[in-house]
Length: 562
Image 1 (tube, helix red, strand yellow):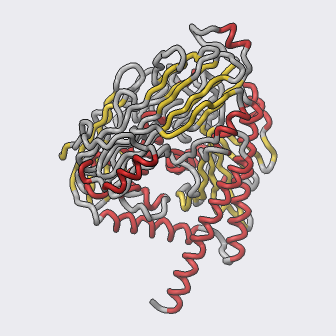
Image 2 (tube, helix red, strand yellow):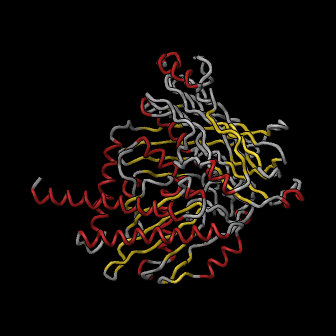
Image 3 (cartoon, one colour):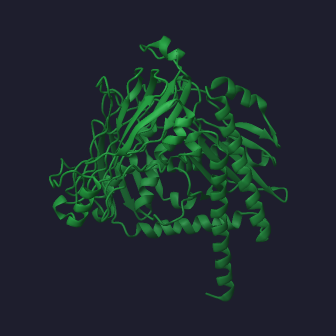
């Protein structure tokens, strides 16, 4: 390499490092200014910078794959509605269209063009999960999208620095928590503005007219690095299937994963059809979590942008549960969509068994509770008299065991959000958390043990009834062990005093004076339990993570080659 080429390579690396710092500061600004607990406490957000043609250059480490990977497509939808040449300095655009955003109405996406020397040089995009968007709340009970709340098509939210107050008027009139939701809208505007200021400073410091050449270089290098990572994998097609709880009846998920010299194709042919409940998944969200599952195994150290995502292609039958079409209900799309990395893992384990984790709890076990609102068939007078609140406690199960390592306990995978502090939730709503601890023996046995779930007990501190809106899976069909490992424990929920077993999905009343008990699922084990290091067994026993030293696994799943 010549001295000139060396200086250019160093310059490219410096620009790349600064871009990462810019988008991470963008994300942190969003966390620090957000009003809603999903963003401020759980990190349910995304942030990134895009070229003027809509290609993603860099994303913040903070955030979720479901947001950032689907946001990569949403920027293209904004550009179709508002071509870059029609945008003006100070404009900001907004949508929560599930098919043009990140999968359901609760995710609000904002896009801000950045101008430098009078020309558009980039776009910043960010997403938050707002605490309420109207409709029947965030559960799976709606029959179609029109029941699920306020639908904002791509709109101009700020015009050359002036907020379109009519948009905020509509939002305030349609949500139960207008202060929090409006605050999150302003936080999105602010975080994009922080990104814009930092990018403009970068361009001045490096004496760049725009980001185009640097962005093209980053995207192309990422594409080539992903192609290089593919060479480590055998070529062929492998299939996997998974049965999940569904709403009333189980659903089947099928995937065929084909690895070739050109890239990876994931085909969901054979997957169950969409249903008249809110667990359907828009294709953008399917793309996001499928590609994330692939990226965890192939080219995990390659930057996530349009270049590294390009070799991954996802196809799914229109009208299937993973390619639901409008006006399907999609509020709880994560219950199905976050199972897709495990589905992909099961296929790729057949190609590289030494590289792939076992199944985990996967989809979140968020505890959604609200008070002061009636429910069909419930004690409506008592519910209406109760104090009004609406909270989401981001709660998690265990991840699957990893090659050579145990699974992570009470950890969100694949979403990556954090468990929310109980003290924060108790200041936001009249709730009292009686118990929150690891669920012993919930991780599947194996040479590597599955991660543990947790046990949570909650009551209404006012002594009033409240409503649970459940969106849980892995109750009937727990995480399956691999390579001789045991299954993880299934999840469960019940009323402590009445003993009533609660459904995994849908709105249900927690009567006055009773306590909600939630047991989140455990991750599955990996490898023969007889081969587990005795030192690890003794450590787990001492810590109370396990109460017995059984090496007998539950039933296993091996998958089938094409």
